[in-house]
Image (cartoon, rainbow over all chains, first blue to last red; front, side, top):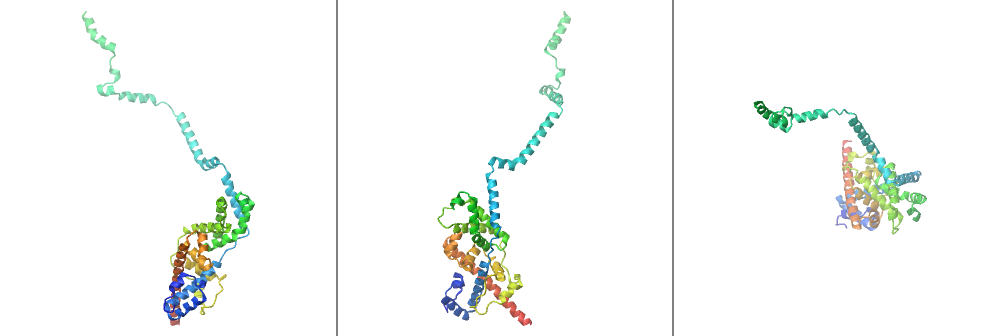
Length: 159
Length: 194
């Protein structure tokens, strides 16, 4: 041990768990080796602070049991509510808003004036295929009887 | 135990009364604030009651609760940001004084209980480790638990526990060595200026 550095030994186990013989050997080496002495001092102090930390435990308060049981009852109460009711509770705001919006839209559509239809027909006929192709409106077209009477009108006059 | 598995409330209350010191002791390894320890302990018991049906009674109830407590606390601290390695200037006056007055006689044993300064110093040193490494080191070096006990409490393999403890011990020793080195240099310069 005297010739061998002790750092590996210090990292392998807590210094408090080493046997007296091992500690004596480490100390003997540390007296002669500066780097190992620093490592040994650090390991020794680390062990002391870690033990202090391990002893710093917090005890449960007298109300802890009551608090846990209250939380448990609350959890149970939530779990015992039917799934459909829990679903309604979480979605009721959204569903209500949607219902109100739908009702408002229905009222608006019923109350609005229905006078737009004739105008629409007129505008459609103004741009009908006939009027666009023939360049005349349907009002100018003659009926079949008018065409016949126009053709045979001259014949009647001749007779 | 059977009554608790049947959902009897008085049996749950008895479990809390009997095992809360153990659960608090586990949570105290991870947290110093009472509110956090209580929060963790409550979560442990609520989880345990929910999962009580899966407890087959192969091991002890205390061991089962210890494992739930360890995993719950690890999950709670995993999200917390790890602090960077601190320097000697971060130390409080009390901590610096504690380091300065370290026992000269190496066989001297300090009182480790209720030593708040040493506990604070330990927290600073442990903050450079991962929560898992902290856990392994505190149990083995602080509480003198065996490798097997740590493996049972955490669910890790024994070789994993050994590796974690070795790595953590080395990191903490190096951090402490650095602090002691800085302190001795500072003391030397203070003496020169006087």
